[in-house]
Length: 303
Length: 334
Image: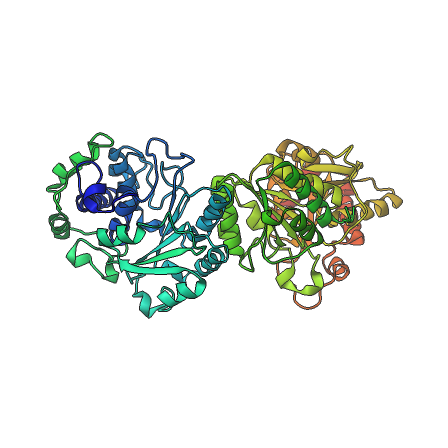
C-alpha cells in the first residue's frame, strides 16, 4: 500500500508543489519561444498532471514509452499540451531541451499532441475523442485481465461534444471501473463561460445519470487529488469514475486567471515579466538552463 | 452454414467467421444493426461481439482503443451511417495510427434506394478516398466480398468493405480474378473499355452484350478496390482503348468518375472519357434502382449509348483521340 502524502511521493528531491511551479513556468517559456500556445488551459490542469505522473498514480517507464504494463493517459483536451510536454520531458520521456522548440520546425512538439511524441498515446485537439478511445482501451485491458488504468483528461467545455455523452454511457454500460475520467472544470470555454453556453454539460447529475461514480474536488490541491485517486486501481464495483476537478483557467498568473480573454492569448510586453515574476523561477536566462538539465534530474524552482 | 452463398453480406460474415476462428483477438462492434451473420457470430463468440449502441462516433473511437490494444476490430452497420457521422473518428482515431479497424458496411449505392437519402450510400467515396491508408473495397458479388474481407484483415490497416444488399449471380471467377490487383477484366474487348464498380458491374456486362450485338467489342473492368490503386495496372486499362466509360451508383463527385478523371488527366494520350454517375444531389422521394438507371443513364442501355456516342466522336475522320482533342481545342480558340 502506498502512502499518499506529497512528501513521500515527491519526485526525487523535489516537492510536487515545486514540480508544478516548474511546469507552469516551463509552459510559459515554451509558448513565448514558439510565439503561440494555449497557456491558460494548460495551467488549469498542472496539479492534476503532476499528481498523475509525479505523484505515483500512473505506472509508466519513461525509457520505454510503449511498455506493455503501462497505464494509459489520454489528454483529450489536446490544446492543454504545454503542460503534458513539460511533464513528459521532466519525467524523462524526451530531453527537456526539446521544450524550447515547441511549435518550431526543428522540433517535434506541435500545438496539439500526436503519437510521434514519446509518451503520447493518441492525436488530440479535436474535442470529444479521448473518452471513447479510452473506453476501448479500458475494455481491452479488462479482457486482458490487466489492472492497468486508463485515465482521460477532458475539459469542461469539451463535455459539450455529443461523443462524450456516447462514450460515458458506453463506459458505464460495460462497467469499466479502471477507466477514470478527469474533467478539468475551469468553467471557461474558448470565448465564454461554459455556464452561459451549455450549463448542463458538466454537472454532477449528468455524469451520475450516465452511470459514473462522481467525485468532486479541488483540482489544484495535491492532498485532494492524491486522496481522491488513492483507491483507483482497487476499485472493482463495475462503475467508471469521473473526477470533477474544480480548477482556475490561467492559474498561476493573477491577471490571466479566470478570464475568457486568455484562452489562446500570450502575455506581451510588460505582461511577460509580470507573469515570470508571479510564476517564480527567476530571469528567463536562468530558468532556461533548466531545459538543458540531464534527464531524470528534477530542476529546482522556488514556487 | 445457413448463409446464402450469393449474398455479399453473408459472404462477408463467412470471412469474419474464418478470421474469428483463427484469431481470438478479433472482435465485432455493431451500432445495434442486426444480420443473420451477426447472430451466428454472437452464438459462437458471445464475448467478442459488442453491440455498442446507436452511437457511431463512440463506436469508432472504442474500436480504435481496442485496436491500439492489439485487436482486429470489424464494425457492422449501414454504410451511410458508418462513414459520414463518424468521419472524424475514422480520420483521427483510426487512420492516424493505421489501425486494423475494418468497416463492414451494408447499403452501397442505392441498395436502400426506396428508404430515402438517409440510407443511400452514394456520397461516401470522396471522403473515404481522402483518408490516408484507408482501403476501400467495393465488391459486386459474394466471391469478391468474402475475399475482400480476408484481404483487408491480412493487410492489417483501416478498411471499409461496401456491401450491396442484393445477391446477384457471381461475376467473378476467383481462378482468374486476383484480389490483390484491386481490379479485374471480366470481358475482353478492343473498341472501348467500360470501368465499373459495385452493382454497376452487372449493368456494364449487360451493356457489353448489347454492344456485341451491334458489332462493338467492349471490355468490362471491375474496379473493386478504390484504394489503394495499382497505378500501373489502372493506367494500362485506361490506355488500351480509344474510349473509356465509367459507371457507378454514386454521386458524380468523389467516386469512380473522379478517380478515373484524375488519372486520365495526366495521360500523355488520353482516351475519350465519359463518366456515368448519379447527380450531385440528395435523391428525395422514392428512388428505385431501375428509375435511377433511367434518369442518370447508368443502366445497361445508358452505358451502351455512351459507348456508341464516344466511338462515333472518335471515329469521325478516323482521328486518334489525342489528335481529335487538339482539333477541338483549336476550333474553340478560333
